Image (cartoon, rainbow, N blue to C red; front, side, top):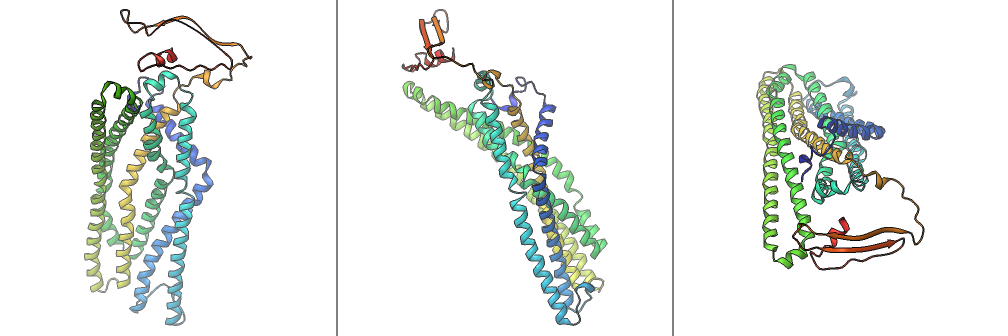
Length: 409
């Protein structure tokens, strides 16, 4: 049974689970706020140097074509100016490298720490579940899916996805601001071309998250069926039903493959949408820029800088769709995991047991009998059993003789 089908069993409402999932996320970030602040600063530093390098290339081109450049970059002679430009460009490249290294060892590393935290939380809660919950609701397949697929999807919103969010916001704002400082009409025209993006991305992300939930539920069912096939391998050999189980397993695998394929096709739509918008903006800027350069209303350096900035803006635009997708998928996975984290536990498993003296009886069974129906043959009848402290008991028997039934009773 998938997590999505357990709402009738779980006492927590969906709004409560959504709230707890976001609380889990915010608490982790707040606990590691110093690392996150350093990581965000490193991303912003990297973005600033990327924009500065692109703008600097335009000024370098203007210097070689004898156009005016900012006074801060000018020297007493052409050679002084050249050296200044060279050292500014070199410094920007070095700082960019340091910034990228900085956010990788701080912000991005939180992805892996969050993965460990989520898997630990699964174990810390599941080991105290009621036996009935483990048999009916949180089966092996569901827990396998939770500890692999859901954890792998949820962990990214603690690290790499946040890197992309800061990158989109800061690099986007900084690029647009720099473009406005060069030529306002060209910048506004390029942004108008991209106004349709938020509407398209929002619709596409909603469709994607629906298909993601379907694929995750299908994967849970496949994992559950796989565990059943492995657990009954001896029975399959005895009853010659291996072909039946193989067909079921292959069918379930193909079903998941198909659902995952449809999800991937939906996700890949972001590429032509985002890429097409940036290419269209580039064509508009290139056409208008050529006219302004030939009419001496814009320097060649400013024209090249504008083209470089629009290409720089393309990266956050390309990331935008995937960011929205990753955020929604990540929080959906956190909600699925939160149902595990807040499921009712068996308090008998968490309390300290009583001290048992040697030779004291732990279990005493008298005249225990069991059969499935009244007309069926008894699996066992008038069974008497006494277990004392430090005793050990081994139960053997052929398949179907009632070993598991006895233990469950």
